[in-house]
Length: 101
Length: 215
Image: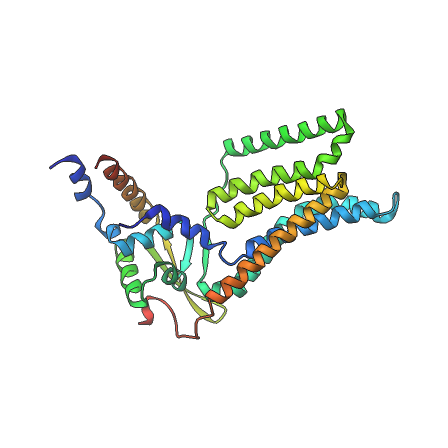
């Protein structure tokens, strides 16, 4: 298998999905963000956002914390250390692939 | 294909889309302008002059702190209910960067002091010099976050500084006028941005609990 294709074959598929990639890219910049912020920034529906966040949480890439702001329930999402490392690795690998192709 | 860099940049820009940061920045410069104006107009040897001298450190030291508190207050009231809650990573500057900043600031300060002692008439140029230095700082910031408004603010800083000098208003009077005008430019730019933001981002209708378990 050519090296550049192998680079793609080994890519993290949890992050590679466009919606999750967008979410991870946003979360890589912020400390934490709530559901409304992520929904507005990604343009995803509530259902889609929930499902993608659940997949990222399952992979251990995001931590979801349920809290309150005053009396309003607030769902805070942040990238875990594992998520930050995976995103960094994905970014580097994909950049390498683009440079070679 | 997803443009990761664009998404990261857009996320950083989202912090500034409500204009509140410019309003806070402008308010700090209005405060500084007001302070220098009060200092200039205070009668020589009066208690007011002494009090203002003592207040200098407090004004400089507390303005950034106050601005950040006020910014957070309005973010909670205006922004978070409309476009969601977000906190950004605080990047502490590294030792090398701190040293470089201190060296640059020292060189600029020493150059200005030397220039001033060699030729006191240089005080006429103080507003222009202030305007230019701040324009460079704002330009670097604008380049980092990629928002056109901040390029305009950088240009405004340089133009205001040179205009005040060209009008022959130098020294502390010119500097206070420059700070006041630049502060007003920041506040106006921020208010205009805020109006656009409020029109584009109405408060979502009261809904049930948000988040993955809400469905």
